[in-house]
Image (cartoon, rainbow, N blue to C red; front, side):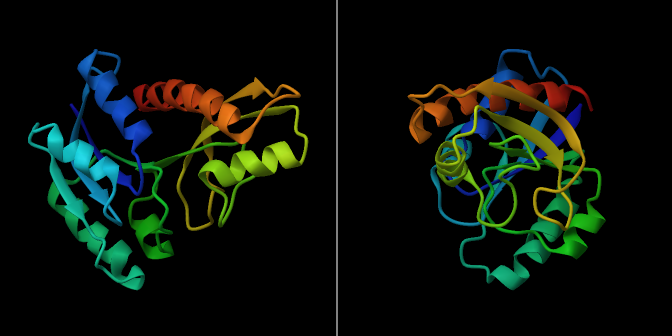
Length: 189
């Protein structure tokens, strides 16, 4: 049984996809032991409501410079096989990334290396893609390193962008892709 720790900041849509995939057998050899948020958010409330013996921790009051150390300490208690960043907005420091090297993955709403890096997340990515009149977008699952959105790519998938595409409609297309490639990526471990 592979143990997962999930780091969240927002709605936790991809975290919910993981829980659903575990429940319906698409991720049959996985369990979530720990969900950590860097702020009060819907995702942490969702995980708490599951009542499935999952430890949930909100580190909203921890100063950003100590956040990676605090997360590291909680991870040491559970020793997860994989750490999934699911819309996690805080930047993990280089020391943390080195200690957990090869065990941290992230899902990003673009075809990296395009539209990655600091400040490129969520709707901001889709707005830039539309503004630049791209014909194709997609999502990428990659390993997390000290360089933002620069780790080795595990899996990515693309979709076409119509001439009438809006950031919201593109976000919906990308969300479907994210679910698919995140579950496939986890199953590849």
